[in-house]
Structures are given as structure tokens and as C-alpha cells.
Image (cartoon, rainbow, N blue to C red; front, side, top):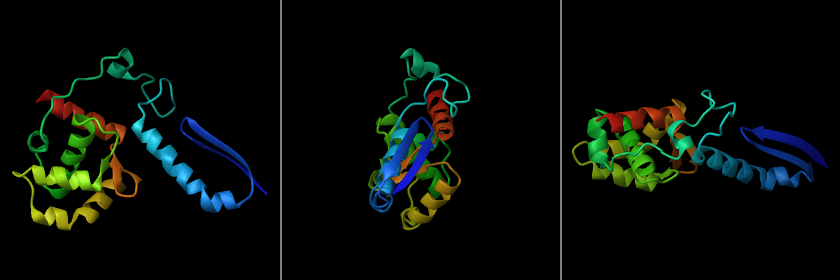
Length: 164
């Protein structure tokens, strides 16, 4: 018999029962909680939200992002490297297309769609680039081969896309 409590942002889990749960189910639950936390907008007054508000989204008027292509986003972001192009591709999938996350397949397709910036060597080094971006917290690994944008990176890219 095992008993524990776990808190991750606004989510909490209290468990008392057989330890087979730890071996079989806990990793799946934590992965799902992480996905929900990345996909959800910040909560008003939540400790992870330093401003204590949700800005424009709180008023029901989320910033309207232009429907740019990955090529245009890459231009606006002054892409010069593989990791830069990955960020442009993730931005296209998440910010422009409105998906919660970007799969490796979607990232690859969007990189190739940015024909003015794409180089085959970027695809050859994709895993290393994604690892570097994840360690720098510029993208977040939500689940295997699925990535999200941290709030600070999302805001930075939205500003670049909207200003141009």
C-alpha cells in the first residue's frame, strides 16, 4: 500500500492504493497533465502567471494573428539557422493554424514549405535541434515527438508576427 499527493500547477493528484499504479499508470497521467497545462491558457491569479491576468484573451478579444505562411514567418523572424526555422514552423502550426501542439511530422512539413529558408541539412539535424530548443525552453516536449510553445516564447513570436 502506498500513499502520496502530487501538485503540478493548478492540477493535483492524491493517491492511496497498490504500488502497481506507479509502475503502470502514473507516467501516463503526468504526461496528460503536462499536455493539458501547456495547451490551456494561464489561469487568472495562478502562481505561474506573474501578471495575475490573461490580457486580451481575458476580455474575449485574443490578438488576431495574420494568417502568414511559414516562409513569411521565417522572414519576419529573420531565420538564419535550423533551430530558427523550427521555431517558425512550430509558430505556424500553433499560432496561425490554431493547434495546441505541433508534431514532428507537422514541423518537418512546415520547414519544407518554407522553401526560401529550408536546407536539407536542417532535417538531417532535426533531433539535435529539437533537443537544443527543448533544453533552452524555447519549445516544450509535450509527449513523444510532440512540441508546444512556452508562454514567453509564444508572446515573443506573436509580437514579431503582429508588428510586421
